[in-house]
Length: 135
Image (cartoon, rainbow, N blue to C red; front, side):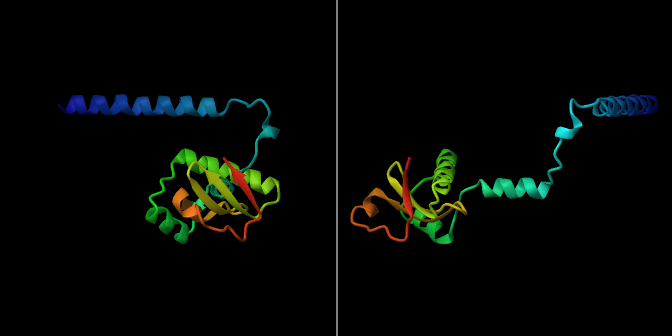
């Protein structure tokens, strides 16, 4: 049994060494153009990802739950695109109409301020908005 353990140990050790050498060789291959590499830090990538994500204020989250409004990942992506369109037009606070729901959004921060369903919208007045986006 000791020979089997020692034999397996050496085979495993050799395999690790071979894989390490293979990885080192592939990492040392020259790239097509090293000047095109960008030094992007994790912090920058994280900030960019956060910037592209639609978030909900506490108030909007509560309203969403009270009114049984479900927001899928696809809906979040649509809201993000609508925020981008609103920003392009210089809209700060936007009314985004999607399906049977209305979202009041700070377009620059991609932050949902409040949410309403179609029943809530019937006799409501929307104020403090700079524009509307229908998706």
